[in-house]
Length: 234
Ligand code: C5P
Image 1: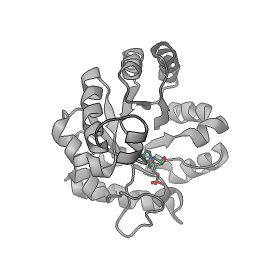
Image 2: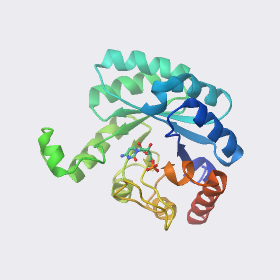
Image 3: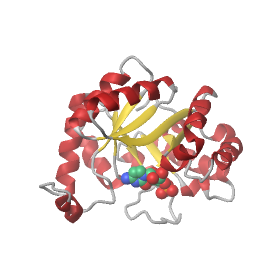
């Protein structure tokens, strides 16, 4: 991804209870951050109009809705998301769901990302959910299928990124949460990586929440990560 500027590779997760707090943080971060992720928490607190407003104001927005339903329902939903002007939308990596989402986003600026196996799942959880095979095998198989169907990218854990980069085409985006600058509090993240390591593993976009959102100086925290991305990418 030589064409992506280091700053545009950082996605800040706006994991805050209210839009009011998210707006204040975005204002504080100003030009330090170009890309934001909005998930369930904010979506259910007026976060969707806020996402559209952020996009209209020139930011890129990743709507992390992890959709999964019958194809027709997914397609109609994705068509409306595409009209919001956001850049990324997540769906679960089931073939019908991905096909419907990819078809409905075609011709718009919206790119579909697939979530393969939730990172909170281990092999026992996958077996309990009715899957055969290990999480590692499932992630590889579902990622290959997602690429074949034409999604723009895969959301993956830092642990999976290197292996996926080797099996997927270079243009398939890898988007990775669980990123912590050296010495930062991991919080509840069990598998973490530094920004530099993620870049070296071939990750295109890093999703970072608490190390920036909860920092005393969020802009300085974001700038430090952008600098680390730039150094690792050069
Ligand atoms: O605060 P932190 O940097 O851990 O935030 C990571 C963000 O990425 C959160 O919004 C979290 O929901 C999301 N995420 C994750 N692990 C996944 C998928 C999404 O941490 N497997």
